[in-house]
Length: 548
Image (cartoon, rainbow, N blue to C red; front, side, top):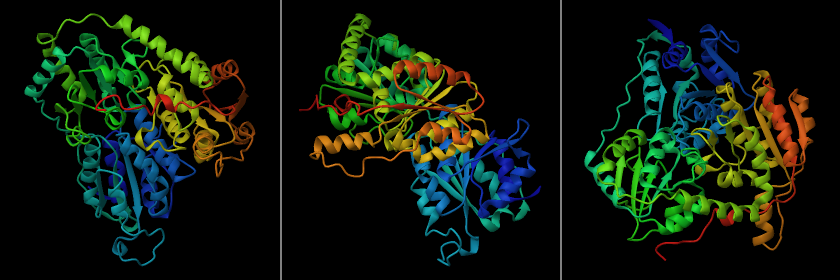
């Protein structure tokens, strides 16, 4: 058939089941938006392609990120080149760190001028080079006939080996260029072969272990059932932090948080690390000859990045762990149940946390009491967010969203907005500090325009609280660039037409959340006024316990 490049890209996205675009339009992409309109684009229930226009490019990128994390499926955003690309770059970088399948569609200056420095609108030197440092796969569409194949390759790349984002550039004069186009069906994603010899060796080591420990990261989220079964077969506690939260139900005594995992790391003889960088254990806690580490990771380069493991099982966690479960019984040592021991240790750790960060825990308890088990919690770089990574109970996989190692302030509200847009069937709760919230608070306009029922708590202390405390404790109370001048957040939200309320206590917060979750016709902002909150860092940055 004959079609423009823009029409071919829209058709290819629909072939791959991608029916929503988070976007901020601009002249470089006008032809693409016209193709969306001709294909039945819009915001109504009958739209073939939903176009969610945002008020800033970073909002488009973060909303696509949130939608991808909430659904586990590829999502896309579209921005203009140069400033548009750079405004959304933090979201793309975060998607890379979180292994999120986000497709960035990025405009370009006229094709003949690329790389010549002629000063075209939004020109940036070596845009393709910038993009290539943010994603593993990127390409430029040069003629209409390339579009179906390149979209298919991008969609496949986002699901191969180490999942993650991809990007496609298209020049302003190529979008509306017409030519012959051959549709391309989705490309198969080859599943890496399972190394049965390596799995047998892992089964023998784990089966003989006296004090096994499992560490679960974001790559284990789709293998929750298998991790749970292995934990009980081995009587192995499961350490999760941030991206691994919810892989094992936190009501299970074998589910342990970071500081308790630190204690268990010192005792373990074999660690099974599933889909995790093992950053804190390997960089801070230490290793020695008495600890054998078995890594399960989709990226062949990851297992030996910090230190060579005893065994590396490369591939998707679910089939690898399924095979491991099949052969483990032949090698597994009978162990005494550890549930009573772990329940006691959990109680003692909870007592320590209560003594140090009780204010944050009170607010988290109020949230947990009202947020349904299948509701999504989106944390932020804020004092309550740090505590949530340690002590917010998570019951199911894919229900706790944390920004991974980028840990970028201000990502949360817009990311949660995308998660709620994509998952209208469950409540989504975002938490922010007063500093982080204003990074993307303008997207309240987007929430109202598209009636997105996100509930957001803004913990307001009038400062970049973590920075302020660091300056007080480590730099002689020489305070600089840490205090904030805030709007009245309730009035601010209401000016957009959003529901808004102020809560001063955990009980008041719980009541406000109950009302917010019942309100499904638009966003709700809950401002919680707090003073300086106690530091959680002794439970996060902990001393070396091995290889002293």
